[in-house]
Picture (tube, rainbow, N blue to C red):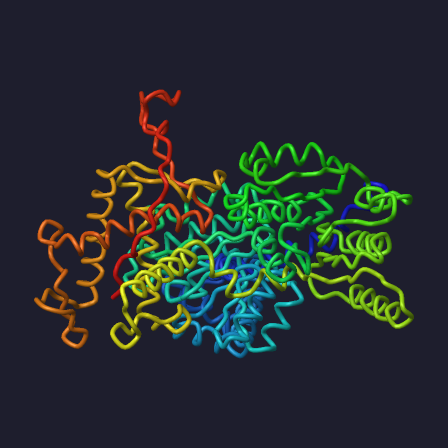
Length: 630
C-alpha cells in the first residue's frame, strides 16, 4: 500500500478540525464580530450625517442609538446612499444576532436542561474520553445506578449523539482544560475516570483535577487514570501515594494489560485439572499483555517457590522470544529464580507454523496445562488459537484467546469445536478472554492501590481480632469488607492514603515492585517508633475531625468518646503496640499493591552499599495486629 493511500483523507480531517474549532470558539468569535459591526455602524452613521446634516440630529449619543437600532432593522432604511461601513453593518448585525439567537434557542432546548442538571449534581462520575474504554466504563457505571457525565473532545464522535439520546450528559471539550472540567462540575464529583487514547492527556487530566479541587474538605475525589504503556504506568505509580496528591484527590493509575493479566489468571488458572506441581503454561505473543501475564504468573507462583523451591516452567512463543525473556529477567531479577522461561523464537504468521514442533514430543504428547494467546490483532490471535487447537488435539489443553470484546469470530470457533465434539473429535477447547470487558469495570478501575491497601488493612484487622477472641457481637466492625459501613471503609482508605505521607516524613520513597521479596522488609526499631507516633497522630486528627473527644473508660460510640484520644506520650503500651503493628505490616501491604520501600538517598551519602542503610539485609517481617478502626 502506498503512503498516499494509507494516509487519512484530508477533507474529513480538516472538516472535523474546523467543526471542533467552531464549536469551541464560536461565542468569542460572534462577540468579536458583533463589536466590530457596531463600530462600523457608528462610523457609517457618522459619515452619513456628516454628508447629510439636515436629516437628523447626530450627537454621539444619537449615533450609538441609531447603531443599536440596526439590530431590529429600524434605523438602517435611509433616503440617501449610505457609506460602505454602514452598508456592511446594517446587513451583518441582524445576521449575527439572528444566528446567535437560533443557536441559543437550540442550546436551551437541547442542553439547557443538562446545564441545570450539572449544576445540581453531587457524587457523580466524570468519564473523560469516549473511545472503546470510555464507552465501556460509562456504560458499566450507569448500570450500577451512578449518574455519569462524559467529556469528549470530538463533537463528531458518533457515540456523542447516541449517549445523549440515552440520557447521558456529554460535555464537548478538551478534558485537560480547567474550564471544560468546571462545566462537568468536577469539584462535586465522586470519581473522575481518564481513559483518553493518549497517556499524556490522561496524566494532564489528573493534574487539572488536582488543581481544581485543591482545598476541598469533603471525601477525596477518586481520579483513576489509564496509562497504556505498562512500563510508564510502573514509573508513574509512585505518585499514587505521594504526599503531593494526599488530601483532596485519591490518584489511582491502572493499565488494562496488567489488570487484564490478573483477571485472566483468575478466570483461566494455569494448572487446570493438573496438579499444581505439574503446572506448565504456554504464553504465545510477548506484547504488553504477554509480558504482564508472565509477571503475574511468577508473582502468583512465588509463595509455592518459597515453600518448596520448585520453579514454574513457562514456555514462551513469539518473535524474538529469547531476547524479550532476557529483558524481563533483567527487569525483574526474582522472575529468573522463580520461573524457568523456555523461549521459542518463531513466527506464528508463517504458513508452515506448527506449535507441535515446539511443545510436543515425538509421540505428539505435551505437558502444557494451559495456553494463552495474547496478540493485539484479533484475527492473528484467533488463527493462532485454531492452530494450537489442531496441534494439541487429544491433549485436552485449554486455549485462551485474547480479544478486546466478545467477538462473533470466537463464537464461530467455539461452535466449530462443538460440531467436532459431536462427531467424536478431540479438539482442544477454545475460550475467549475479552480484555476490555474484564478490565474496564468499576471494581477494576476504582480498585487500585488505595482500595487494595484499605482491604488489606481490614483483612489483617479481622485476623488479629479473631485471634484475640473478639466476635461480631462484641465488635460490629468484624464483618467482611463488602458488609462494612461506608464510614469505616473510608476510614481504612484514609489510613492507606497516609502511608506515603508517613514514609516520606521518615525519609523513604515508594518504588514499583521489582523485588518480590520486598514484603519481608523490616524497619529498624527507632523508625518503627517514629512511624507509629505519626500513625497515632493521624488517627487522633481523623477522629477529632469526626467530632470525637477524649473520654475515660471504654469507647462510647453514642457519645463519641474514646480513651486513646491523647498524645503519644500519654498512651499505654498496649495501645502503642497497635500503631507499631501497623508500621510493621506496611511492607507486606504495599507489596500486595505493587510497591516496595526504598530509603531516599541524601546528597553526599554513600551509594556503593558499604555501610549505608540500604546495605542492611531485610529481616523477616513479623505478622502483627493491625491498627484500630473507628
